Image (tube, rainbow, N blue to C red; front, side, top):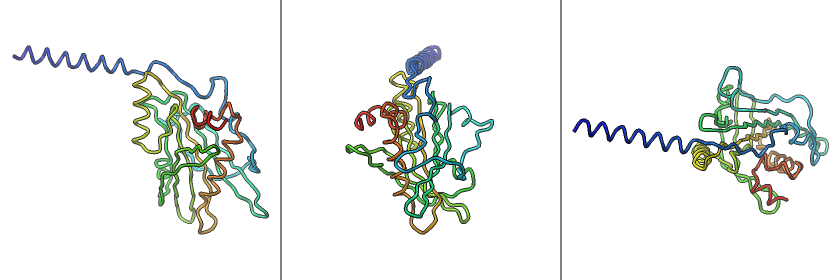
Length: 233
């Protein structure tokens, strides 16, 4: 009886190992060509917005951390648009990972901001509207630290999927692995410091929409995936 149990246990372990080996991702799929840089994909000016210096952009500490292994490239810029005599300033963070596997996952702002001392006081799932009826699944957040109130709009892309939550992200990683792929991934985050009582989500939505539409048509897939990019063409 003992020998039979041991035999069944060993057989089960072998089967599990076989399934694990079968599910191991074997093919790398990239929506950003290997010879292309994210910094060259994101336009420096578009629809009245122009990149410049300055801006206190919240960034995770990448030194000697897992996040240092997550991203192949990171772009941090401040943009300004004049609306009459008023200047509107938006901070952009784009982080790209060439191999987003089960081990390497996108670093979401829900962790980044609290890690730097902010409290998240607002969170909402959001559909960013684009032309031709296209929408990008995104997230709206408000983070506060002392007198600083920062409104945030971001989304993540993992392969062709645009996960809004941790569970969505886990499912996206599982699905790509099940299909034998290691997908690249990107996090696109825009934020602005609130200067009055009203949140800046409308301005952030305009900025992200203008940025996508100001990007070369054959590189929009880097941000939002091939399926949505083709619908914008």
